[in-house]
Length: 536
Image (tube, rainbow, N blue to C red):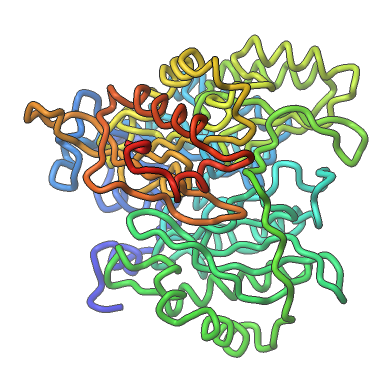
């Protein structure tokens, strides 16, 4: 824990939440050049603000030594959408901010958030005013603090849900988000709560997964210590069953253990997963119960494992007798203009509930049977199909070098061309794919788009093109998965592809899979037994 690294010293010197007042009272008036660099590169994150990448610098410039060059005078701003839940007034507010202040940028993240770009500090107070007028916020959307709480996009309405986690999500946000007691954690802290396994619970710091207890009925199974980045680990079951009413208290206890015992000296070892790995889950539970909850938790059963990702794309019936219509933008890329049009289409269909998903998708709830076809047609015109091809449905990407200072390669922007390319190249075998083949594209090793748990995961880096030139490319991870066979992808020795070869590579591997798979075999199962030549 000591000596304190520079990030820890910054948090000790002044609670990062305090920077909001300086943004409103000082920086919004002085402009970018008047911002204290310690605030800019550290505390701003606690209010959802990162500087974006300066245009014109390729991946050879990526690195801390070039931060002064790479730092543009504009910000990425992240809006918390806890549980992915929005009403039409909120969606229209998000859309209006995008068109007025963000050059019409709006990306759906795989944490159910919205991300703007091109935000100027002078406009931040007005953006906050508009967001908060409809009960949205950017508080702790980034930083070493409890970030957005993932929840089921169909919470309370899914026919497959064991229990509705919405009350716990809302109570955690109400009680703890913005509380200085929990705003100085060793690193970021990610939470997922759902009555079904649609929130990638295995890769969150803490997760509550719906399960039926044989004596006590519906509740949640507690998981801790998941996370990806450069040292990925899957979360471990604590073995405890938590009733809905106790989820916020147990969540607070887990956060407190992390705050008080988590490692702070090296940021590369500061996530909760390292503490859980070193302690073991039995000791973690013991400390949780004896020092923080002051009581034992009930033992409970494990949830049944799903066989495929639950992404809610398409049309499905809800408990209220209406329908959900889930659509797929390419890698979450939308715009303020599109989101405003989605709000209009949803309103015409009689809905006031929109949901974002952990797979960069968008869902309209509460659509009557007779309104479904018209809504699908309206959304399809916006480039948001409810019956997408496998390649559009199952591809995710991070922000990439277009805006991110950490990235080595283009990702989300590249995806906009890659998906139509794959749709055309693989059209003849789509009918033979009765299982999803997921493709996750990351611009760097931090795995914001979860490269290690995709069927085909790409980790961005500079690679040799064969002629001695450093070009954009990827290390490939194959056969990663969450759910039934949760495991990280297989890496082939010295196997890398250039960005220009990505489409060729995907086509080659997918055709080999279709040719050589056994009946019903999933991609991750095939990868484990495939000849290495078929994977290259």
